[in-house]
Image 1 (cartoon, rainbow, N blue to C red):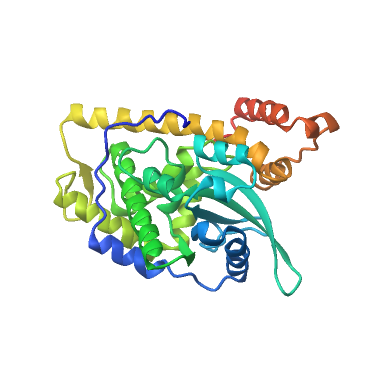
Image 2 (cartoon, helix red, strand yellow):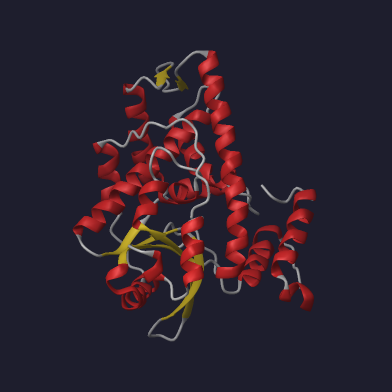
Length: 331
C-alpha cells in the first residue's frame, strides 16, 4: 500500500555533463567525525541492507547552530529489513521517508544528535524522477550533499545520479515559478528556496536560501549555471541582453500554465509535508523537545508543555500550529 501519487506534467531533467562534474567533485565527504561515527554504527545495524549514507544540511554547509542536528539520508534495499517492527516498515513505504533521531557518542565523550531519513533505493529513484509527488527528497538532495559511505561503486553512482536529477528538478520547478526577467543568481536563490516554500517552516525560506547560497556560492553557481546553460540550449529560457538577464521562453498562456502548475506543486508538497508531521511525532524520539527548540531558536518564543500536552503531543502540535498560523509566524 502506498499513498496515492499525484504529479504535474513531467519536468525536463536537464542534468548535463557539466552539472555532473560539479556534483561529483563535491560528493566526497569532508572531515566529519560525527558522520563517520554514525556510518560505523549503521553499517553494523543494517549490514548488507545498507546501500548508502548521505550527509546533508546545516552541518555540511557550515551554517549550523549549536542546537542543530546532523542530517542524513539512510538509503536501504528493503524497509522490512531496515526496521525491527513491521508497522514502521509499512509506514515508511506509505509516505517515504520516515524520520528518526539517533545519538552518536564520539571517543572524546561528546554526544551528537542525528536526524535520519530512511529511504529505499526504489523510493530514491521515484523521488528524484520526472513524475515526483512532492519536493521532500529532491529539494534536499538538490543542495550540496556528501556521500559518507556507499556499498560499492555502483551504489555511489546511483546516489550521484539521484543528486544530479535532484538539482535538475530544483532547477526545472524553480523555472516554472519565475515571472519577471531574472539574473543567474536570482535563479539560484529561487532553486535553493524551493524546498522551503514547499513546506511550512518557522524560519523565512528566502532568508535561509540566501544564507545557504553565501556558504557555498561556487558550488551552487556551478550546478545551477550548468542547468541554465542546458535550459537555454533546449529553448526553455532566452537571454534578453548583454547584462545576462534571462526570461522563461514561451507564449504568455504557456508561461501562465507553468506558473499554475508550480503553484499546485507547492500546495501538494505542503499537504504531504503535514501528513509527514503526524508520522514524525510517532517515529522521531523527542519530537516535542526538538520542535520547542526550533521555535525558541527561530521565533524567540519559549513554550513549556503541560503534562497533558506531553502525553498527547499531536494535540499540542495542532494547537500551536494553529496559533502560529494566526500570528503569521509560519512561512
